Length: 354
Ligand SMILES: *Cc1c(COP(=O)(O)O)cnc(C)c1O
Ligand SMILES: [Zn+2]
Image 1 (tube, protein in one colour):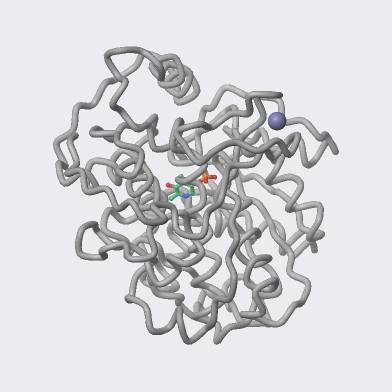
Image 2: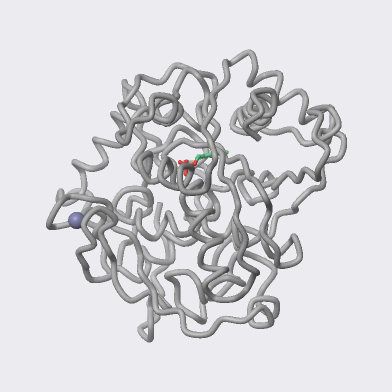
């Protein structure tokens, strides 16, 4: 899928200053690097934000680009040049709260309102911007489905080359890693491989929006579906940034993770008290969460431990019940990941953890 190149040479990555290794802290230049030269640890974007105000954000576009000052994108990123996902509704789910026996207020972040109906449009938008700045001319990805939709739409193709692999997501991911540096794919930006540091930052916008939509407040508890673990890690990171920038009042929050029992490496590590996440072979209907070897698994566990949360998993039958419950109570027809989240919420409540 080809994208039009339009490089913006002043501060092409906004307030981002460098990449930093999450394992050993080594620094790297902003580029198409994703693993540390010193220790092979995952690289993450680091910033020098300066002053960012609520007014500045609120006067921005009604999309995730209102948070451009907090993302590795040009400050003057042109909203009209991409699908501008984000600012999906935060739905007050009173019927579901009642069905689950929740006495407090329950909100559902309904990211089905994005251009290809999942939060993957957010991460692709940020990865695409980085890919253009870095001179790639083709967008690619390893995907179980949702990410491929988002990539195809963002590249304005919706008719990309789909290469089926005999194997699971983890095999595809490994193949993509092998393609990087090969001549045939030298111009390809793999959004979740060599553009991964930028891609992952897009998930922070889920956290930013929840806080802004709650009236610049943080929730007490949040349940987040976990595949690679990036979404969970970055929602927590986004809230820490909001606190540091003085955009919300500091308060404790608890982060809970949700997986399907047929692919539960993070939930298992949590239950066994392990620091490391042992890979599993995925076998579940929750395809959007079917990553057996999650790149951000240990960092997701860190966030859950630090915030006094927990990780749970549910069977495929419970996933279907969760989808049905959400649809019946709130009129939101989620995919399997939504079913996992509702069903794990129910389970955590029953266990007295939530
Ligand atoms: C990809 C995906 C997730 C999991 O995201 P990670 O960042 O890989 O943990 C959750 N829900 C939906 C709908 C997804 O498409
Ligand atoms: Zn390192």
